[in-house]
Amino acid sequence: MPTYKAPVDDVLFLLNDVFRIDRYDNLPGFSDASPDIVAAILGEAAKFCEEVLQPLNRVGDVEGCVRQADGSVTTPKGFKEAYEQLVAGGWIGISAPAEYGGQGLPGTLTVVVNEFLASANMAFTMYPGLTQGAIAAILIHGSAEQKARYVPPMVAGTWTGTMNLTEPHCGTDLGLLRTKAVKQGDGSYKITGTKIFISAGEHDLAENIVHLVLARIEGAPAGTRGTSLFIVPKILPGPDGALAARNAVTCGSIEEKMGIHGNSTCVLNYDGAVGWLIGEENRGLQAMFTMMNEARLGVGVQGLAVSEAAYQSAVVYAKERLQGRAISGAKFPDKPADPIIVHPDVRRTLMTIRAINEAGRALVLWTALKSDVAHRSQDDKERQAADDHMGLLTPVIKGVLTDQGFANAVMAQQMYGGHGYIAEHGMDQFVRDSRIAMIYEGANGIQALDLVGRKLGKDGGRAVMAFFNEVQGFIKENGDEAMKPYVAPLGEALGHLQQATMWFMQNAMAKPDNAGAGSYDYMHLFGLVALGYMWAHMAKAAHGKIASGDGERLKAKLVTGRFFMERLLPETGAHLKRIQAGAASMMELPAEAF
Image (tube, one colour):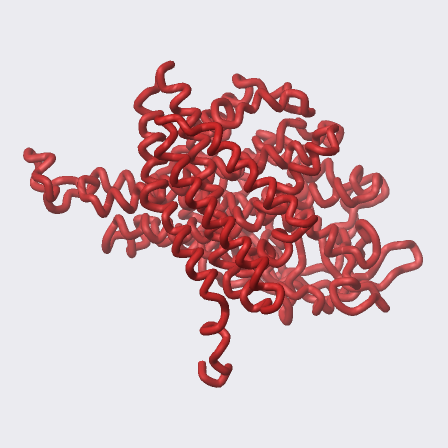
């Protein structure tokens, strides 16, 4: 059976030594997040994930969710009790504003806790995760009355939230949606249509579910310019906030999925359901993007989280499984064979996963801190720079960490040999669960197109130039002998990224297919440079701290960082070559030739 231990020490190293969270004390909520408080919060979160959620991961996969005859949905055994503990611990609202019942702590802590939760039980974590996204959308775009009515019970966890975009005939192209909204005399709307793939769309964990639904008001313009966003609760709240009548939204069925069986992915039917406009008419997509961006970063965290859980189990197995002898001579002559961790190819596999996980976690926390700056700073320039970072890195985090998360889950499964293919060891669940992260909240090919087609040129390339300048500045400032194994390869990789960016500028305007053909490689090239930059930061922090104790753990950091620079970062050269090949051979064949 899989095992999991939350990487609390690794997170504390990143927060305290790499990113120096104390430098953010000028932001609201950060002064309350002292090192002792943060350590205590993460320790409690780890305990809950390891002792309560992780044992339910296999249960949720085997049992799944069950739709009852009346359209209600029953979650797997133990989920309801675990959710009650989650709510009692206040985990949903640790970063929500205090005025709505939250603790007002940095959003970065929520990101960390969500990684632990998803490693322990990804399907379960989607229930509170979607709620947090809905809270964010209502706080930014909702009216004062909507915030007062819906946010406190969602922060408390007595109500949950969803996002309703996809319809049977349209996924990414939301301009095609048909769900209809008809305005009523009292200012409400009647919502009619069918939404599919709605995660956490119906369940027995909370007393109410607040659906955020994208629909088209009668007479609205065609395409995405005619979409609006609506709050459509499962049970309508009365004037005093107490639950009243059941709304006309029902679960038609539960999707039969490859993985994440513990989450109820529903077909939801709206038959004149009562809803209220959130934000402006015909600007629903802009409002929904608040939730989608939160979700995309959250899905990137899922990729990291499953990768971490799979890695930990693979390490345990590699240390225990006896198979053959080390090619350099027996390492355990008193045993009938050596454990497989002595073999170089096993080491290559485990080091690859570990190097990506540790840098991926750093990249996520760096970006989470930027999000806190964007939402909490009083300085306009700081907010703008942080927002630029978020826009640029969101598709990279979502696309790269979920691609790698699936690849890493497969590699971890490989460590088990034939046993990895047998369900009782749990590795097949990691493979199946992680696969969805590459697809939902914008398939990764769309993330790559967003990066190249929108983010690079936005505001005259301000965000990408700031990234280039920051990395180049770090390289110049850290050219000493100790840092040379990290900054020299990083400089070469940054050069590849800059060349690729320039190639697009010179070759994509006249032939847009060149941008489309190279976008996926560019996303991964960018991701490798960003991960390499994180390793350079971690190496610097480790060198600075290694004399003060905890030497073995910090030495392991330095070795893992060197492995990344030597074995993984050189792939930037291959990505550059593929980008520079252009679209000719890719687009030449007629469709009939396939």
